Picture 1 (spheres, rainbow, N blue to C red):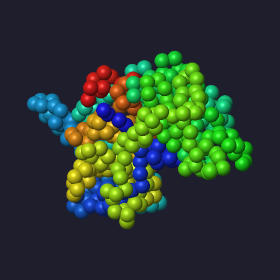
Picture 2: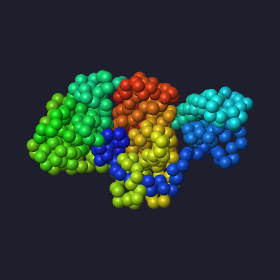
Picture 3: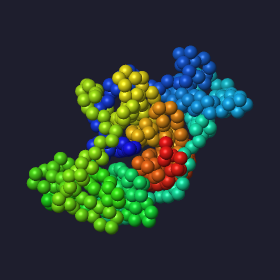
Picture 4: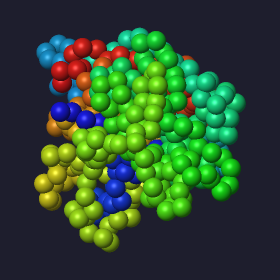
Length: 434
C-alpha cells in the first residue's frame, strides 16, 4: 500500500509527521558547498559564465535548466529534436543579449552598480521561463481539476489566539486514504506540537472540530488537551491519540486518551480496542528511518529524513536559509543526487513511499520527482513558493498552500504579507495508477 510521509512543518511534532532526528552522515559524501553550474566554473571564460558562477542561485538555475533540456531532448525525436536544439541556441543568444550585452564581468560584479542587480534579476527571470517551458516539454504537467480554496474562517473564529486576521495558522494537514476527508492540525501556543484537529469533508465542505479546544487557563484543568500525538483513519472515522493535562504529567509525554470523530460527532473513548491502538501506532511510522541507521555524530539535521525500501530523501541545511533537497538509493555507499536547491520551502516535502516519488516546492511551481527515473513533472495550477501539504493515499486529492489565488501559476516570489490560502484539487485518473 502506498503511504505518504508528511511534510516537515515548523511547530509540528516529529513523530506525527513521520520524521526522526538524523542525518548529516547520509550526505557526508556530498560536501555542504554551494551548488555547481552545469559547466565547469574553473573554465568560465565569458562575462556571463563568470557572472553565473559568482551567484549560487544562478548556478542552480543553470544546472536545473540543463537537466530540463536533457529531459525535453529525450522526449522528442527527429526534426522535433533538431528544432529544440535550434530554439535552445536562440534562447542562449537572447539571454546573453538581453541580460549581459557587452558588459564585462568587472562591470557586472561591482557592488555599487545597479548593473549587477539588473543582470541577476534578468537572468533569474529568463531561466525560470525557459526551465518551465522545457520541463513541460519533457513531461506533461499534472493537470489538476476542481481547484478550490478551503474556507478556514470557522477555525479562526473558534481559535482567535492562533489566527492572523480571518486566517488561522495551520500546523499540518493529513488526507484520508480515499481523499474524502481532511484532518487539519492546529498549532499549540505552548508546545512545539499541534494541539487540536478539525475535520473537513470535501464533498460538502463541512468543517467541524474533531477534538476539544485546549483550555487556555493556567494551570490547565485535568483532561485539557495538550498535544496530538498520532492520528489514523478507519473509513470516515478519525482516531486521535491526545496528550491531556493530568497530575501524572503536563506535557506531550503525559497521560494520553483516544478520540473518535466524524463530521457528525466526536467522543472520547472510555475503552480503546487493541486494533485501534495498533492503527495509531502504524499510522505514525510511514517513511521513518531509525536512528540506529545513522551514527550519533550525524544527528545534526532534524526532522527531515524519509525512506522506503529503495530510497532515502532529506532536506540538507547549508546555512543562511539555503536548503538542498537530496536523495540517494538506500544501499550503503550510493551516490547522493541533488533534487532541488532553494530556501526553507524545501523543508516541507511529501514522500510517496509506495511509488518512490517526492512532491516539493520548486521555483517553477510544486513538482513531482520520480526517484527511480529522476523525471520531474510540474503540477499545473501551482506557483513558485506554493507548499504541498497532503496527497491522499489513492492520489485522488492534493492539498497545498499559496499566497496567491488557488490555481495561479506565477514565477515571481510571493508577497509574504498576504494571507496563506489552503487549496485542494483532484488529480487526474492516470496519476492514481502510477
